[in-house]
Image 1 (cartoon, rainbow, N blue to C red):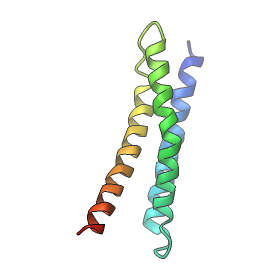
Image 2 (cartoon, rainbow, N blue to C red; image 1 turned 60 degrees about the vertical axis):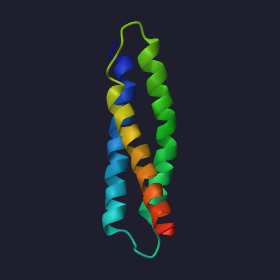
Image 3 (cartoon, rainbow, N blue to C red; image 1 turned 180 degrees about the vertical axis):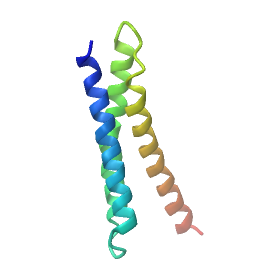
Length: 95
């Protein structure tokens, strides 16, 4: 039972560390090259399989586990943040 909780907890910790690094890159990164935006794109691409994995593992088990809720929520927030960034960029283009 304990080994089934290690994977989502470790994924959530890695997601939090990557979000902290993304914030650091945004706050103290170079202004000439948008490193934080590129990192956000890569992070969103990595989080899409996490969303799919959370959907599969949360519904596959006999007892519905909410342990996958944290990584899935973080992945959804990252993908939503990237979508909002693209919408703002699109609005600025046609403004």
